[in-house]
Length: 318
Image 1 (cartoon, helix red, strand yellow):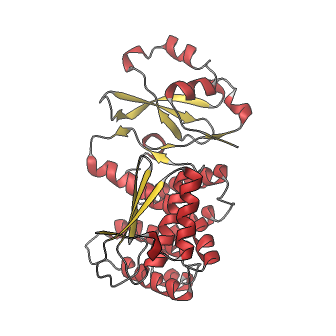
Image 2: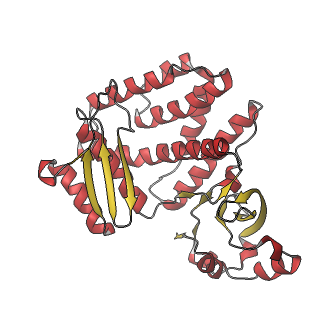
Image 3: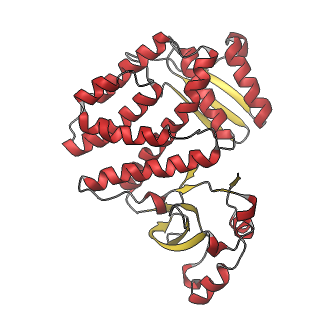
């Protein structure tokens, strides 16, 4: 792995790096770890944020400009006022936990791709050639050399097609509808949710994320599988008005004794669910032994802003 000096980067990339560094007070370090790739995929650049340093690694040399610009746009969104996903509970089954997070992150990144695509078309890093190569990679992903039962293959293809439709600008809709009718039908529901509103707005991004995860969970349930419990397992950054922040907790949220365990303590978890959408915004730092009817009565009377500050809940205002 070799660090890439800024002098070896294009003007466009340097401008992206400088903007992120100045706006978010971070230092971006870019490294190459090139390997042979038969196809272009969107995971050929990755990043890790540790304190004030953002480490970016690119593995595709031929399309390094594209994958690096793509990753930098994701980084900018991550550092911006965009709702994020976190998790502080566990089912006790690592494979199950990992599956929930993998699917949620896949849906999340596809929603981000609406904004990233616009930016890359504007700066010229998303070209006709890139689009063609990206779609070749999607075709390979849709026909994996692994053995999955029919339902799980449909679940998998749904996520691939969802991203392919969004980032591929609907170029293969007719083809995929013919080849994979059920997965396409499922993916199309997610696409309609994603494209219904301007996702550069934090409130609409969060709503689309919650609704898309709900829709995907319904797909799983309709095929006779156990649901993935997104509402209690995931905490998604709340987006509230200044007026709502001054309301008492019981007007907007309810405390739920979760089926999951608190990952930090191993004890029963209590999550804070929005009344309107049933989605958790935080896992509460409270001792299960102290949760009594009297506790609930007093806790619900606190102002939302006071609870958020005490529990260190990240929130966004609209």
